[in-house]
Image (cartoon, rainbow, N blue to C red; front, side):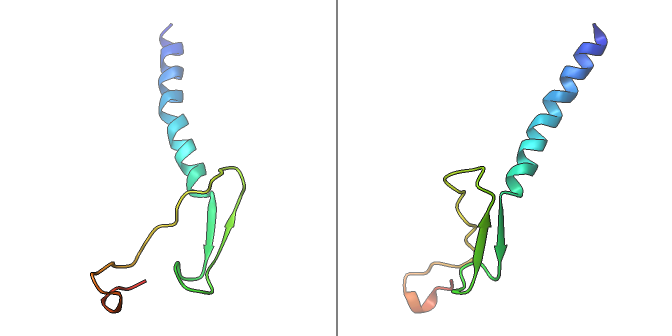
Length: 67
């Protein structure tokens, strides 16, 4: 009985970690994100694809903002 509980506890810990690791490999970004020449490759397992991370700064005026 104790062995079954140990196995279930290990599965409960490993399953979410595996799911997150697989999600992290869901897309491949080539180039600088936000640049006109940047491309992204999706594996097609997750639709719609998750949003890209935004690394810019949004200010009140466009000239003060960065992409």
